[in-house]
Each structure stands twice: as C-alpha cells, then as structure tokens.
Image (tube, rainbow, N blue to C red; front, side, top):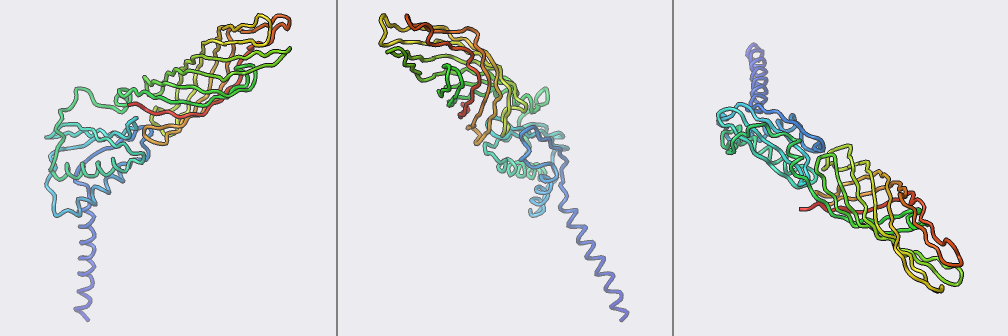
Length: 313
C-alpha cells in the first residue's frame, strides 16, 4: 500500500511535466506581427498563423535557431489577388512579396506558414535588401493602377423621350485605390414615330464620362461607389414619307450622377449594377413642316444598367 501511495503522485508529476513539455515544444520560436489590410479579412490572423507554424515545427525532427529577430507581415488585397509583404529584422534583414491570385487566400496562407517555418528553422532568409522606406499596403495598392474593360445593357426612361434600352462599351481606370475614371460609348436603338402619313426616326450615338468615388479600396469583393456623369454626342432625326424629307443631326449634352455597385466574382471579373439621373444641358427638338414639332428630347431622366468588367492586364 505504501508503494502505491508513492507511485501515484510521481505518475501525476510526470504526466503534467509531459503536457507542459508538449506546449513548450509547440510555441512558435520566432516573433512576428501581422497586419491585414482592407479586403484581406479572409486571410489568417496572427494567432491562427502562429498555431499553424508551431504545429508544423512540432512535427519536424528538430529545429535550428532562427537567424532573424523579428518578422513583420502585411497582407493586402490587390487586383492580382492577395499580396503579403514579409520583412525581417536581425542578422538577415530583407523583404519579399508573396502573391496569391486565388479568391480565398488559402494559397497565401500555406505559403506564409512554409516561409515562417523555414525562417524559424534557420533554413532561409529573404535575399532582397530592405528598402529605404517601409513598404506599406497603401503604396502597394496605389502602384497597380489597373485598367478594366466591359460592356453593359442600359435602360432609360427618357433618353429618346420614351422608355428605351441600349448598350454601352466601357473603359475604366483607377488611379487611386478609391477613385475611378471611366469613358463609355453609348448607343440607343432607333425609335420611330408614325404621324401624318409619314414617320420620323431617332438614333443616339454618344460618349459618357464619369468620375467615381468608392467607399472601400478597389479590390474588395463588394465595391459601392458614387459617380458624377457627363455625356456628349449626336441625336439623329430622319423623316420619311413627307415632302422634302431629310435627316438632321442635333447636339446631345447631358450631366448627372449615379450610384454604382460592383461585385467581384473572380480576381479578373466583376459584375456591375448602376442607377442614376441625367439632366439635359441642351434641348434637342425636330420639326416637320405642316406638323410642327414632332420630337422634344427633354431631360433623359432615370437610367439603370447591368454589365460586366474584365481587369487588364
């Protein structure tokens, strides 16, 4: 009985000692900090990454001492996917970028675990020299300045003085993370009016320019924006069946605003929706002798559109 009493406490101490040893072995042997920028919420946080690195090192046969004192990681959402900037301090000072073009950040997470594990094990250090000024998420996002091409269907309550559907071909350029400029070619199909034994048809060809401000930086999965719009083009009226019938072009000038919403479905593809209101800066009207005024452009009014954009390159 005395032997049994002595053995039980010793066994308990050994069990606790083994547990503490396991926890110590799983501690990450490298100090690092991690910052996730806007749009990078799907990427792992510091605690999750530290646990994965510790688990990977624990499974290894043994580890050597790291050659760096600290690692700083900044993850940003960029047009090409996710970008992680890894900077080291200590005996091996350097910086490297890891890029993942997927939509879920899974590939970047695996690459970070591998990179941190190799640095902690003393196997690798970033070879690039440290830049004079620290690399920030904002500087990386600003440098990309992507272009986008797209097309959309557009419906209007009064661009041709009646409900009508047309289309646009769009080019967008984003010089800043939250600012976009666009240029679109607008086409509206012919509208015909039969009156007084003849007919008059109208067709619009115009260019639309826009400047948009987004609430979140470009690259986010959902991108709401407010835009200022301006348009200029030609409105063609052609008469048929009347004495002295002819065709004429009239200037078409408008300005207004819109609310846009972009939804990224892939690193390069986005769906867009928009609605807005246009005011006429110059009233265009057509007259037919004997009938008087047969068309008055008035204010184009409300419009709405659905389309798609493709990022290039």
